[in-house]
Image 1 (cartoon, rainbow over the protein chains, first blue to last red):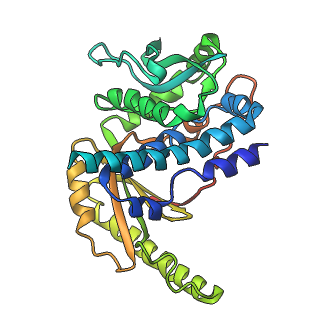
Image 2 (spheres, one colour):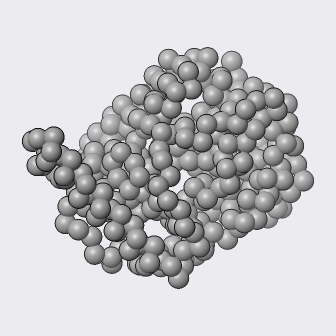
Image 3 (cartoon, helix red, strand yellow):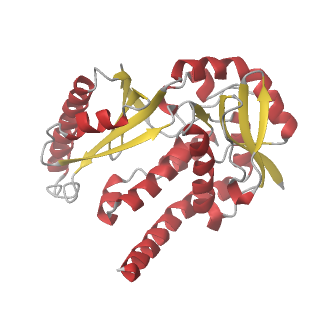
Length: 84
Length: 239
């Protein structure tokens, strides 16, 4: 089970190319923030157990983070255009 | 179902201003043990997937609030405790280790430089397996060369350097004295970079990459330490 979670976390936003394609500092910062809050710092073993109890939720959650980032970036771009 | 979400640990002092609200607008509370302070909130768990991005940003803002004033040890989002008692047990168990790391990292921040294939380079020339592997080897050599150049360029201001090879690039982490972030940016941004590579500099961040192993994956009463390689990434080298 631990292995499964590891794979999923490795899918977190480190896709630098797609970051670059999206462009703009705001967007990069957003992805970097997500990367740091999810991948850097203290890992609580107890939380793994909790997360693993709802493995699909964790997977879904992380998956949705990526989706949401894309959605957010699109929205940011639309907002930018509106401002101009 | 509610859980206790831990944000970060820090050397608690009266002059440090604390944030009032955190993830999902929940009040941020302080738990202290000796000189160690730890911020936490009671949150609904698991997070609503649609709110994950917002939660991540709110989490970051809490950590950032304290990090702007002093060194912090950040927890990872999605790390929660069952209840306040579990958190208190954790704090008591790990107070000393946390304080040792905080003392060691006091006055430092983490700066980062990521080197990755320039846009359009990842797919270009990868029509065959051989071409792909050759291109990958060239990129790896170039990245390693650049990482070494960064080490040399920041030798006067970097107290520790770690390099991590990821699937999509090389990440170079440098422990820099707080206040010298712009020196780091200047030193790294002028380094020549091979045409097929791009760089991105970021920071300051909490020095999470330089935490001791015991603090990164602390043991909770009655449980084994967490897997160090949880993010599926490999530490390629250190200082």
